[in-house]
Image 1: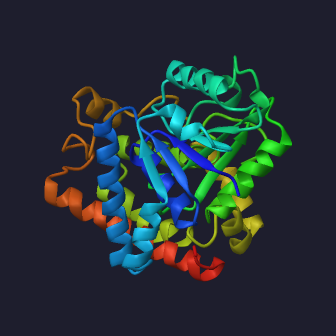
Image 2: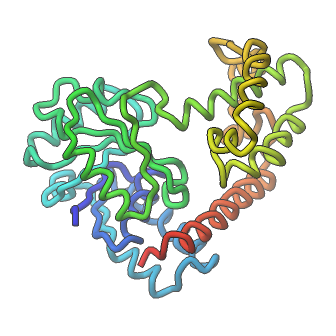
Length: 315
């Protein structure tokens, strides 16, 4: 079994650690300050409580999971015995490259260095590394402890052994890794997500419907089907002749905007960023924010319970 260390204790970092520990793995987590580590510890306890309250495991199991996670402000201590390192630091290119330079001075050449980046191409991140063959992207989706998907993206110099080890450690963590045969901006998930978001913006800008009805058109239709069948399998079920015919007349009318839409651009210019600022497309007071975040979390837990029944437990 790989010895996993995680660099970064923010929302994604400690969530990934929770997933690893739930699967029975000892995991060390690096944070730049004691304050950040305390926030991560509180986040872990909060997430474990929610999962326990939803009967994903009992109090004894929650304690066992927490005992498997070591939080530390010492980078050297965290990576000392690691065989598989997951970097989850901010999306700043120079910051990430600086971290890889430090790591290559601290660990053996056969230790895997993986990045949780959601945007940078692996070949770009690996530039300047002494051993780029052991570098790979493992892009977890937020919240990392509830969403199974992890996108595995190899760079130009990533070797097959690195990819195999990444797939194995993720499968051991009870994740659903998907492998990209070649690197591409946005990987798979964000390309699909933002294609839908672009069309939603275009519909809103054109006044076709209200924001509420545009969202409802997704949540009460394709949102109900997508957990079971992705877009390609959905087309198979509906008939490829039908989907081809619709593609042929509809594609030319779909949005091809190259930048953010008019409404989104105006909201950002007005510092209306959504939930984190209190207003965006919607108004986010404390009560509404809590309601929607809890609703989403509960639905993700519902799906996770179904995954566990299909694929076995995390024990």
